Amino acid sequence: MQTNNNINEYQPQRLAVDYNIQRIKDRYYQWLCDIVNTNQTNRSYFLLIKTLHQKMFYWTVPNDDNRALDGKTLRDGFILDHPFDNNLRGHHASDIFGGPCTMLEMLIGLANRMDGMTKETDEEGKMSVWFWEILRNCGLEKFTDEVFVELGGTIEIHIILNKVLERTFKRNGQRGLFPLKFAKKDQRKVEIWYQMCQYILENCYLEDVNV
Image 1 (cartoon, rainbow, N blue to C red):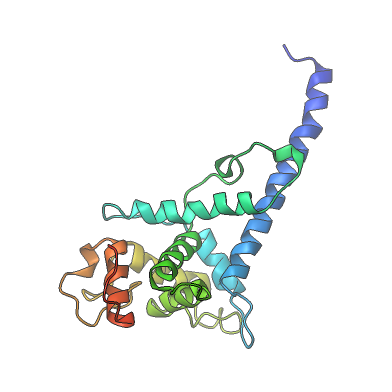
Image 2: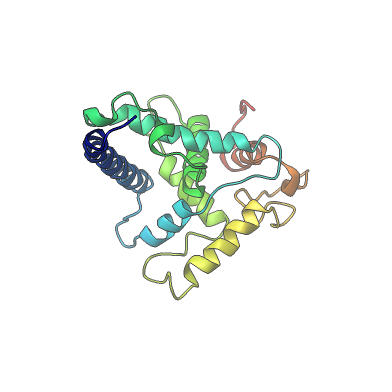
C-alpha cells in the first residue's frame, strides 16, 4: 500500500515524465514540419500541416493499413535519431506517442516510399518534392497560410481528405492521391501501394518498378 509520502514523491516524477513526453511530441511535430519544407521561400503551410496532423488516417481497402505502418515508423526513426534525457530512456515510440497514424504521417511515409523507388544511387532525396506533388494532386497545395481562411480552412481540407479516405474521387484517381492518365482499373478499389506504383510508371517512365 502506498503511503502519502510515496505518492508525494511519485507525483513530481510523473509530472517530469509527462512534461518530457509532451516536449518530445512537440519536437517530433517540428521535425515533421521541417522535413516537408513547411516554411518555403515565398509561402508557408503551417496551418495546412497542422490540420493534416490532426486528422487521423483510416482505410477501407485491404492492405492500406500498411500505409499507416509506414507513417508510424517515422516515430521510431525520430526517437532513434534524437537522444533524450534519462527520464525516457528505454521507452519506445509507442510509449511516447500512441494513437493512430495521422494523415501527415501517412503522406510523408508514402512520399518516402516514392523517393526510395525513384532515387538514383547517391542522388539527393526528393521526399519533400513527392510530398507536395501528392498534395497538389488532391487539391491541397493551394492552402497556404496567407489564403487558408479565405479558401475555407480546416472545413474545406477535411472535405478533400474525406474524399481521399472514403474513395469518392474519380475512377481514374483524379482528386485522389494519384490521378492516372491510363487507368485500367477503378482506382477507388485499388490499394494505395498499387496506385502509387502505376503513377510512378506513368510519370517517371521507369522500366521496372518492384511491386
